[in-house]
Amino acid sequence: MNWNLGTLRRTGISGTLRTTRTLGTRNWSLRTLRRTGISGTLRTTRTTNPKQKPDEDHLVFGQNFTDHMFVMEYDEGKGWHDGRIIPYGNISIDPASCVLHYAQMMFEGMKAYKTADGHVQLFRPYMNAARLNRTNERMCMPPIDEELFVSAVKATVLADIDWVPSKPGTSLYIRPFILSDEVSFSVLPAKHYRFMIILCPSGPYYAGNMGKLSATRIYVEDEFIRAAQGGTGFAKVGGNYAGGMKASQKALKYNCKDVLWLDARDHKLVEEIGTSNAFFKIGDEVITAPLGGTILPGITRNTVLTLLKEWGIKVSERPLSIDDVCAASENGTLAEVFATGTAAVISPIGTLCYKDKDFLVNNNQVGPLAQRLYDTIYGTQTGKVADTHNWVVRIC
Ligand code: COI
Image 1 (tube, rainbow, N blue to C red):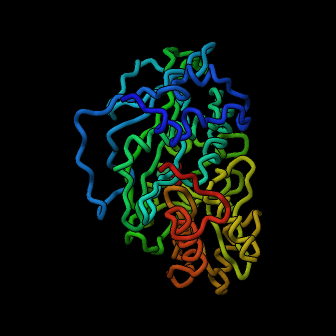
Image 2: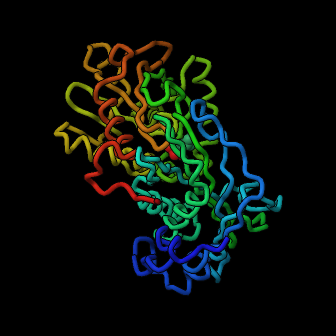
Image 3: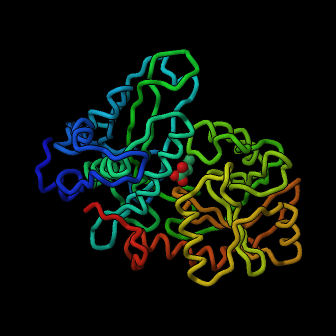
């Protein structure tokens, strides 16, 4: 389909595209944007075979994908080009492609939400764009202009706008990713990449009651590690997650939903919970691990830190040992533990299983702070709570 100028303006893709904004590593000229297909008419091929939409009451995270997807290519010397929306489907890739052997890739995670009055909106998408470029820099992959990234996300969501669910606790999960598909066995950065965006209507990541928090049980992993200083822990790359699966499998054997990661050197400092950042409320202080190498700079993490400071709650980004967490559980000062992430939103933890012993958090109940954060953040994302920080970006 050809998009008319009105539609393109509304999505921010044509006339209103701010081409001089410098948020990434460079300014993009209009010529460059034209080459990407994003500034003129975004080539869109609509599916002739739309899928049946899943039941909103039983949405499982990452199981059902929408009718369309975004694809854009990169060639060294030419840059990003040929952005387009096509029917969702299999992609063809040479078996000798770099990504299949050396895992030069990255991904992002974000969501689109429907408000009660029918608007669809994103939450802090420029933070995803900035993080994408930090990951790309670490992985020797080419940057993507932040405005271009957000425009591509908007256009993809707009193509499948009817797929954005509206039941409490649901959203349209957006998965942008980049893969290196140069045919080469040299262990060197590729010269050809594909940037794609796929979408899936989703329920809660830790399946519980839709829109209602419940406390989960977490295994404290003191054998395997997620990230080490100088590695890729702060970047959003598939290898971080593949390397974590062994521990997640082990956690299941202990009847736990996921793991609490400890630091790579001493296996003592708490780091992340599963695929999310981790927060601990001990007495009056809320503590989370400091950024700086091994911790993913989560957008929800940043949102939580901002809100807690505004609410006058003492919050520290500092090292915290698992021994202090267990001692706090035993002396009754471990008020709350929760995981934060795009997929997980706010996920309260009720029990930590460490060295074959259970440490209870808030008597295994959802704490008031986790509930308040969830209500404020999901409320802002879905338009129930006023967006006083300009975090929301409307699509339509
Ligand atoms: C997200 O929260 O978006 C993530 O990337 C976690 C995902 C691996 C399930």
